[in-house]
Image (cartoon, rainbow, N blue to C red; front, side):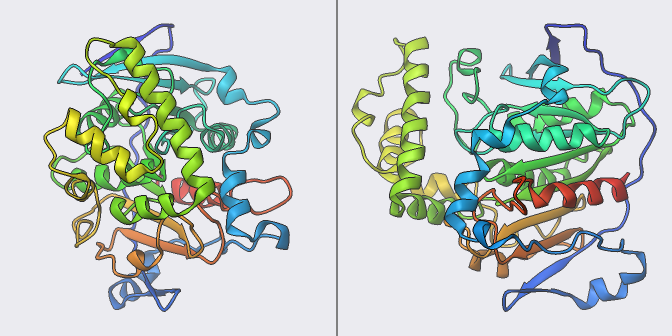
Length: 370
């Protein structure tokens, strides 16, 4: 892979960090309980300082949590992570180019690098990415905000359109970022679809290890895209939000490649499932949406081989991701599952400052892993 930078933001080698403590929590009857295997390893597991989320009454409704997760007002104020950001274009072995932004700490003081992956139709500039990056930067971490293909201002970089099944290009980008850090510790955190990518990346690491990827955090991950699509289509507000963003993204792509794409027939469709079906029929080899969704689901024991320490965070009241799927997950001892009673989708806001509770979970997990 080749890395191109528009500024002189160089990568440097850092100290070796060891992978520590493979953890596993399972959910049963809505509560987190230790398996026998984890109980036997309890003396080696870190003390859990970050207690479960208990938001004030005005933040408990799932709709408020979900809406406020992306509310611009949360990103107001100074953000040294954004101020120090430098644009980077990563080129994979297959020639796919992905856009990102790296924010470096003043040298030599830093704790490692965190890669942040946004959700579907989000970007490196999404509120939850900017606020999480700000928190981590202030904690002493370098931050790399990676855009998926056709997200953020990156539609021009590749002629092909985005599909969520395109794991290899994102994995290659993460591997390149990690390799550029030498032996320095790298951490990965993803939201929603980015959380799904995070789980698939650490799953692939079992076959193709990334030695200095020390910890992964998956927030509100999409486990079964088929079910998630139905949930989106059944929620008028959430459906309107995603239709507007997806239509805009497709319009940008068509404008850049008018001889290749004509999405005009999709623009009047009023649900995500039918849009997906029509898009796949015209521009992919998939026979239908169900087959496509199955190819990036993370169910049926997919995570039993994970070796990278991983924490999955979800909420019982998530309006998009059904919590029942998490109770049936088959995971390895490296995976910790934290199901919260509140949090909505990507929210987990815990006070009037609208800070994300998961930020404290990240700080605790990253500090222990490094």
